[in-house]
Amino acid sequence: MGTATARNGSTATAWRNWAGNVTATPTRVVTPASVGELQEAVRRAAADGLRVKAVGTGHSFTAAAATDGVLVRPQALAGIRSIDRAAGTVTVAAGTALKDLNRALAAEGLSLTNMGDIMEQTVSGAVSTGTHGTGRDSASIAAQIRALDLVAADGELLTCSEKENPEVFAAARVGIGALGIVTAITFAVEPLFFLTAREEPMGFDRVTAEFEEHFAENEHFEFYWFPHTGNCNTKRNNRSQGPAAPPGPVSAWVEDELLSNGLFQAVNTLGRAAPATIPSIARVASRALSARTYTDIPYKVFTSPRRVRFVEMEYALPREAVVEALRELREMVDRSRLRISFPVEVRTAPADDIALSTASGRDTAYIAVHMYKGTPYQAYFTAAERIFTAHGGRPHWGKVHTRDAEYFSRIYPRFGEFTALRDRLDPDRVFGNDYLRRVLGA
Image (cartoon, rainbow, N blue to C red; front, side, top):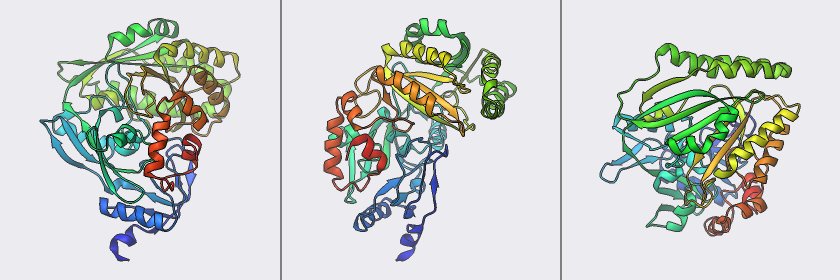
């Protein structure tokens, strides 16, 4: 069968995602070293009657990448393919980790305009599920795509942009793995710039009353509310002339390692063992963070290490509804017997033109709720989801939710456009799985 086929036909063992809440046992795993090998793997799977899913680093909390068929690991398809400084673009292979892309771009004096708060994912996994950061004017990572290459169900390689296969481009930037396997992405980039971050504790009542003001005044605004308290921590990122003035090593270690990872791990472990302690811990923890201001290049400001494992639900709401929904969430937690040790995160994004982007066609704000790994989360997430859906919320495609195709057909005006394209590109559901059957229909 040849070296490539031997490498690409290994007997699989169980696959588990980062959070440990999703497992799958594929029939075989392939690790293609070229686009040609990937095309052949897709053709062979279709001939064998097996479904195919590509999986990155497993940072999704849903079963979007789970399969009992052929699991494709694209990490060998990695690295920057080309940089076009005149056009302001970079083309990168789909298995490249965001952290590697960010560092390579910085070495070239370039940067993405916006990014999420972690950078462990592959670029294809991040964009396919709609990964985003926070921004008044700049949107998700997928909205920064200018072109992409996609292996379709028949093994054909499609190049997609606004000019070439535009109907595929309109959908495949957030494709949830339903339209094919992305092999390369061309992102818009810009010259490296500086961001000044201002982190500041603020009361819940103040930050919610002033939310629109903070949103309007800052390029990137987000905040975290600590359940069982009236305390929040805010972060405002805005462009500056520099120079770089990163946090000192002691401050960085205290804030990013001790409080956000080491101590946070310890208090969550305690809270899981003794839930009654959580409100007291939350009051202390929410006061531990202090105000600080620092300046650095984008990925060092936007992203943070996240080593404490958790399960997450996040909903995208119309921006004008987010404050009311957050207040309802707080009232629900206060009335309940729930004990929540993780802060609730609030971010924003402008409307975009991607069919199944959570910000498609409307200015958006996100509310993300988390529970520590190993802690029962269903009661909290169910109650939160009831609030979010009452406001027309759209769940993140890679985070826990219970919505189905009937719901999505109502809240996404272009849902039918996406499913019709799927019917054309993958009529036999080579790229299907149980998750896609639920969220997109049979």
